[in-house]
Length: 247
Ligand code: 13P
Image (cartoon, rainbow, N blue to C red):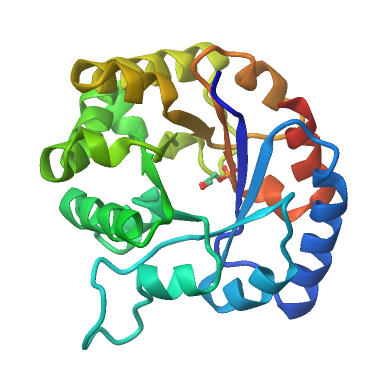
């Protein structure tokens, strides 16, 4: 049985005060839920959240450098994140791919950097609306995943997390239907199973894109949806915890 993971991605939001309050409220509610709970903080608040979290809440980062060290101004390495007890790191979020022109290869390198530092990578994949309309959803998602497998091997997926986030559903209030999401998740698992059945069965595949307290239960009820990556609704403790309770 795969454990359910509900992870919040705060994106570019928060302050010392709001994040301290939010984490306090999430921790008090997270003790009574039946799933693993994590929050991905903006880099600069990673040390703050690192001090606040306990066994009921894990810390993640929203990105990582593909480099270990050196002359890369503004970058944060996986080892630095490990220094602050980060358990998870997002790579390949569509906002990084589109606003920062991150390539599949860079995303694969970031994925590997996290693995090397002992941090669980959360590999974000997903198609744009044009790609869905053109009927190439699965080939886009497969390409994004194969970029990691081809360079670092199927073993690199062992213990990693995949997040399917259709770009057209992110921050739009338009969610993939449970059936639409399930279909892509099942195809992702089939792709992994071609190389390693056990890794395919164990890999948590999260859904992300306008997940909220109203639609969470029906999405999480699908057999291949193992959790959620939550944007907007993770900024309100009540909404975020309601999603955790639906899991
Ligand atoms: P929303 O939940 O705001 O649609 O964001 C999803 C997302 O991008 C999580 O990484």
